[in-house]
Image (tube, rainbow, N blue to C red; front, top):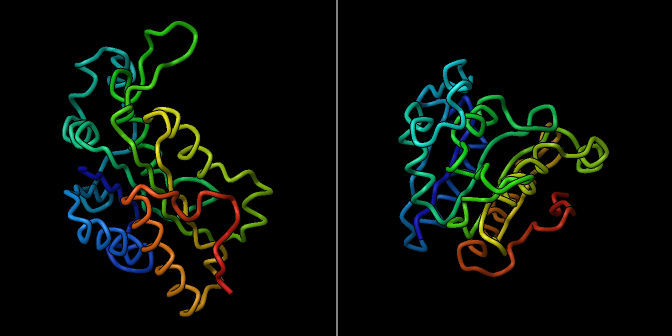
Length: 211
């Protein structure tokens, strides 16, 4: 059960890194072979260039600029994102990763008539662990575009019946040491259940009890 963890934060330390490390601890404890892509650490270029755009649908030539990332994605049956929510959505670095790596014939096929067909059907587990400065209520009012992109847009490309986990620490700007510690414990439980195959904690829209 290889896992791919995509970590997106400009700092290698801090609370988002603690969330990442909590997830990695659970994967290691379960004996899961894990690849970590740290987008900022490797200086990933998120901008889809003109040449890439013009060759976007030309598989397999389209994967050449991001071949290592595509290979890691194709190996994984567990895909986990760890990132901060900025302006209710994904950081530009992570959105750019999706733009450049989730290519035709890698993440989806354009050969199915009116609708795209999923080609990430080897991904049977999808996890998202994030932090939000805004409250849960305000995030829902805006529409939670980051969550919708990953938990709907990416999810539909994965295996039918893909197991999912979504967990966010809302109100991060007003968090306390106690709320952060409780959330890390919830992250550990959610990751453990995702790996184990049980219904993952946090699949509903209700926020965790942060106090």
